[in-house]
Length: 312
View: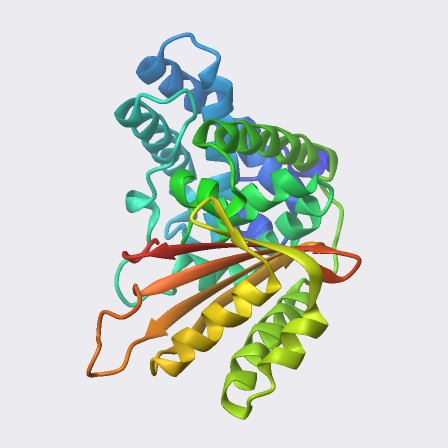
């Protein structure tokens, strides 16, 4: 860490961190760690979950730093994050802290969190750090921090595991990223924009094939013959099942619109909105998420979940 930033005011550290200076963010969190931990202990007591709540809050802060309106108030902002993480855990009475993002969202007219972070160097760092995690943990982290399907239930459905397993994977992922954040302070990484654009082009290409009838060839080219399809957490079939589902939906006059496409090495998440025909407006739920797990460059497993609200 660059010792020259030790005496720098909070607002200058915030600006540096927004520009991609990881060392500045580490200094910010270290500066306010004691106050954040005191807030967590006051709400949770002296329990092991305090450490998990702190790590969740640190990653949320790093993820949403571009949203902070007043850099000089970063201390209060960090305490608000940890406070809402702890309150979410208490409401669910679950041994895994769950963030309550409501107070962290921008007001109407400002860019949403995904749009903001997509433009920032903080997003690039997180994608680089995620690449070092194992596939199961990376799947849970990508869904939790970068998609609308971020609830433990949706993650469990897409990954085909129990909610407790999701909690454990997120806990391991947070701890790994928190450690990486400290170790990589000051390092620079190439922008992830090109990779993100590639994931989006792949999703858009598949949608386009539905209109020209070439989707079967594309699915057979992209997906392994022995791929598994898991819908809402239960095994539903194989590649032929996916083809049948796509064609049934398309023949019913339902179209899809890509909302987002994100990925990390062999893990890709596509989020889509369903556009139902006027004569059957409830044929499909409002949105869906596809979690694609690759092996040797082809899809080996596809998890599918459906959502009915703005956050899934």
